[in-house]
Length: 216
Image 1: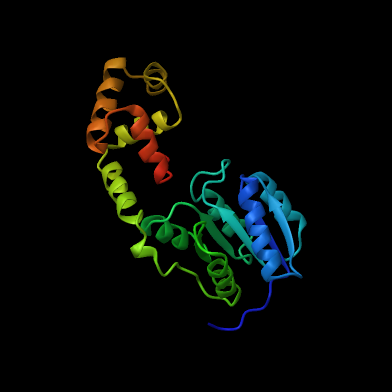
Image 2: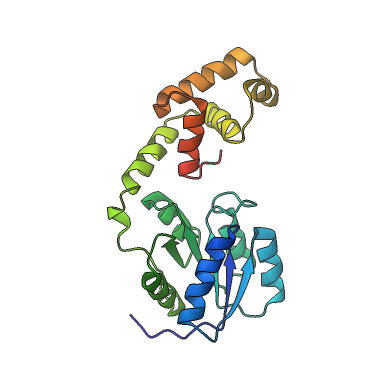
């Protein structure tokens, strides 16, 4: 691995304070002279990026609430193209990593990684390389999450829309109103969704959708 300079400044973007504290601790131990900034929302992150000159690195949570999956990453790449962004997430599957890298991420770091592995990953990014977890294909959740994606991909466009409403917590009558269809039509879509996802309840369908960060 090429020698990498220690970062002068890093921004941690995550809505969970415990995660931010953990990452801050890792950075402080490994790069004691680094200035560390934090943001609990994407809006706050944008404000920080506007005010701070020449950030060396952004650590961005995949599921920050005020973004939709990779929309936050895409906006940062558009607005701050010279600042490398590393996705940090509990979600860990080939499709998500592939999509993140395709959207311009400089690396993808699972939250389950050990401290020394996270540091090595960040050093690789700071050296100008792209970091991809070596254990990606062996991760025990990867196969299951890809199975979920295949099942969701089998839904028709209208069924995907209805699933999106289920994930948003809407009732059948609200979905019928939003889509301007009958309750019978909504119930038929929901039944088809449950069958294709191989689950028995709306709650189970939502849990599966959330596992892969589904957004219609």
